[in-house]
Amino acid sequence: MADLKDRVEGLRKAFEAEALKVGDAKSLEELRTAFLGRKKGHVTLLFEDLKTVPAEGKREAGRLINELKESVTVRLDAIEGQLSLAWPSVSGTSAEAKLDLTLPGRKKYVGAAHPLVLFQQEIENVFLGMGFTIEEGPEIETDYYNFEALNFPPHHPARDSWDTLYIKDDLLLRTHTSPVQIRVMEKKKPPIRIIIPGRVFRRETPDPTHLPMFMQIEGLVVDEGATFAHLKGTLEYFIRALFGEKIKVRFRPSFFPFTEPSAEVDIECIVCGGQDKSCRVCSGTGWKEILGSGMVDPQVLKNVNIDPEKYSGWAFGLGIDRTAMFAYGITEMRHFYENDLRFIRQFGAK
Ligand code: DAH
Image 1 (cartoon, protein in one colour):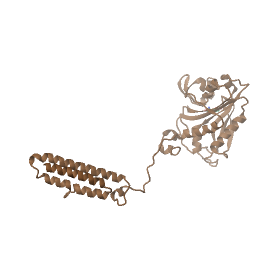
Image 2 (spheres, rainbow, N blue to C red):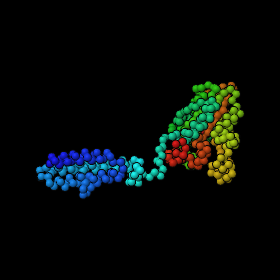
Image 3 (cartoon, rainbow, N blue to C red):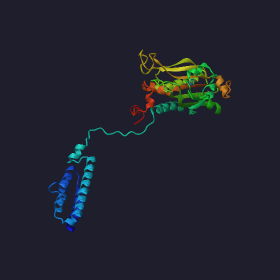
Image 4 (cartoon, rainbow, N blue to C red):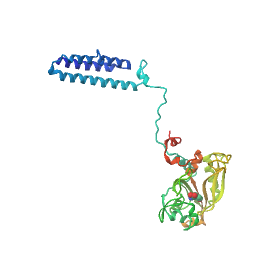
């Protein structure tokens, strides 16, 4: 019995020494056969010898041999696992077969800004470069800031163009970023030169070009002697910075309660170049409206105690989502909010 115990220990040491030398699949198989081989494996032979052990020691001896067999098997499997992960050795066989060096590598993605955020930053950078600063305001607004101070009298029909989501009688989700103009003018005195990015909300049924939540960027300049020429020059500069020098821009008369005169700005359809009468982006008109603008109505300045005799202002509001759709040739606005990685990774993610 003592003799068998020594042999088990001796074999364990011998196995360890051999295991350290295994470097490829071939030597691994040799070692497996030497210890576990069905006829002449060292461990297998120990089981043969067990038959000669007297009855009272058999149980203990059997346990020792089984333990050895178990630890040898585990160790051999572990080595096999390591070999299959490692580079194939020049003489390797099965490890090499498991590693196909012609397969493309697996790409690791890191987080990146959302396409709309990237586009917003692009817009912001153009205005920051012209000396504008960034302001923000609340998404939940009162009727006063969203409408009344912007010169929408109560029950005025112009309110109907903003399909409003009300929380309570007097509390609503802002329908545009224009209320932040009022909030800033209440606190700061001219000269004012700001942009206001943010989310806005409207009662809309989602379709390819409408969503109940989208993004706008507002601009406001109030100063002595601010004119429509400044508005036009600044917006033209901005549009060319975003879409390139050659883009065609047009100003079209429009109406907003808080500006007088008002203008909407269209840019040439870069998707069809005005050539496709059935273009889904410009509906065949060749133009795409991207923003509303105008000279701040003197009544709005009075509402915030700025003297309209001394100061004048101009403002604009641009749809970030729709302009981004246009810039990237995307015909479905919902893509921006579905967070499908196949869509999102085409933009900022490296
Ligand atoms: N708030 C308007 C809208 O949501 C856009 C707009 C038009 C903003 C004219 C302005 C402006 O600041 O001057 O449709």
